[in-house]
Length: 283
Ligand SMILES: NC(=O)c1ccc[n+]([C@@H]2O[C@H](COP(=O)([O-])OP(=O)(O)OC[C@H]3O[C@@H](n4cnc5c(N)ncnc54)[C@H](OP(=O)(O)O)[C@@H]3O)[C@@H](O)[C@H]2O)c1
Figure 1 (cartoon, rainbow, N blue to C red):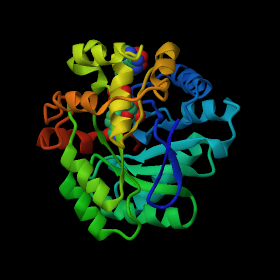
Figure 2: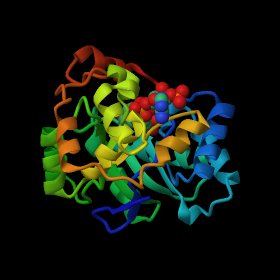
Figure 3: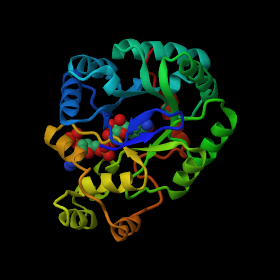
Figure 4: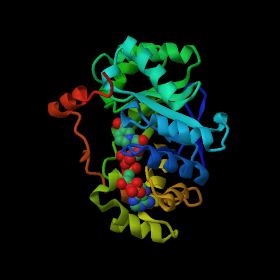
């Protein structure tokens, strides 16, 4: 496992475990227990995933010290305001059964997210969260936030995989010292990623799968990854990426797979924006 030092000096694992679309509490709890026993130390959840309690239950019984775990959760759109963020943070903390959060992220830069960010800056200064950051910030939004806030975002969690590589976004994050973290590092299985001929062929040279190559490729370009799986054998595979190195030629050949757009979400579609605003996770 490799670690990155975030812009506020704290250490974050370069690979974590995501629990999006694992709504069943028993399945989620078992998945997190399996992930921790496989070696994952960073768990990525969100208020909107509806599984913070299950994540918390697993962390309480996983046998790993709190200080050796790194827990990320996210503020949902409905709570994007100063007061909303303060309230939602307390709810997340309670559901997770924790005394502090390692990384608290704004899930979508929509609504009054600057108000929410101000609340998060206070939580950070009070020591309730070790780092704060953003998700889903396109470069112009990230630049606006970085030029506005007092505590720079430590992380921007965005969709990043071989079919959506976003070099300009990474360039800007480098400029602001914001750590990129890839959601959907497998493109959620789209584009036949797990059997993709190029990724499979490269993997075969090292006795690795296409999935492992996809993760390694992001790591080698400085991008942290949070793959999700509810299958222990896949978790083991996804975690076993630290004993091989892609060559410059292999990295470059994967660059050619970039489609330059997402086929998972479209933040420029007003219907998508409306749907996110309409999605309520509490009264
Ligand atoms: N901030 C945001 O807006 C945002 C958005 C989306 C996701 N995320 C975070 O990012 C995490 C990862 O993204 P994601 O869950 O959307 O997608 P992903 O990790 O790209 O893909 C997950 C899919 O890949 C399958 N899979 C995993 N490992 C595999 C392997 N080795 N071989 C074959 N199939 C495999 C999983 O199936 P099984 O589970 O059945 O194994 C699941 O269907 C999420 O869990 C969440 O924590 C954040």
